[in-house]
Image (cartoon, rainbow, N blue to C red; front, side, top):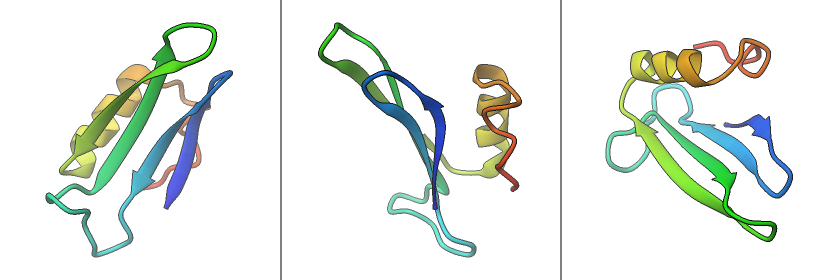
Length: 74
């Protein structure tokens, strides 16, 4: 499943969560692609991978507002 966490001008921060009972290659349960402003034509991409939902939840609580993650339930 894919969720848009934050909409930026050029690109959106996207969270991919593995389906129930499945994992991504490498043992990850979630992959977060974040983009930060680089210049007027492009953004810098950083990829964060999470092996469990506890670390994902801690990261989301620290860097995202409650309104941005209110639709997630895990």
